[in-house]
Length: 110
Length: 122
Image (cartoon, rainbow over all chains, first blue to last red; front, side, top):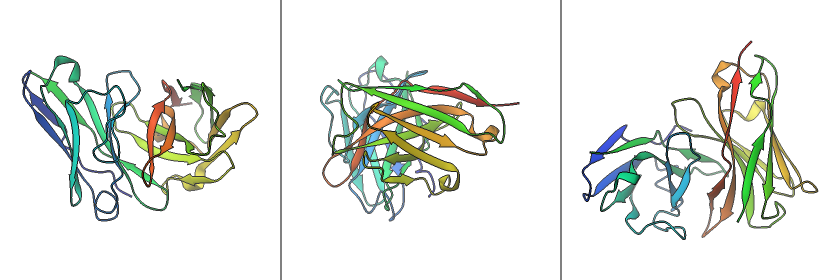
């Protein structure tokens, strides 16, 4: 059970859109529509932003959206804002009632 | 609003057992559509799923940690606990408890505790 692969860093200017990828295998991301995304600010607990690939919890801005193609899931942040600067982690169901997280991506707002 | 709070020693000696408890308020751990989870994050590193428990006692663990983990629940106290045996410096991390909620075919982690740093050192 290896960690899902994410880019170490992604950056963008305010108002722009950025996309973070999360690459797994046919045993996790590719087999289940059970990918979640979490936002983590320094020293804080992760916050659920997207679940089941595309769904947003109540209270999460519609600037955050998720998608999946094959073994790769993606998180898109549109209309980038300063408060979006944080670390982002994907998470996928990996079968046999187990879960695996991604390596994490640091988002910088220029 | 569900709230989770981790508690336990902040320092554990190598080869000893790390023991943490998560106290849940604002909701019952006996609710049927939730699992109760432990997740950790070494300093400066990513998240790692440790395992989770259903109120009835069913448990599922990360295969890489399975031989050292025990997760238990006390429904009378609305708490669940983690024991990690034979710890080394590699087990130094912020440990989070989290609620896993059933969605459409699987669980997702929707509520998290604030986390507690456990350092393994002599």
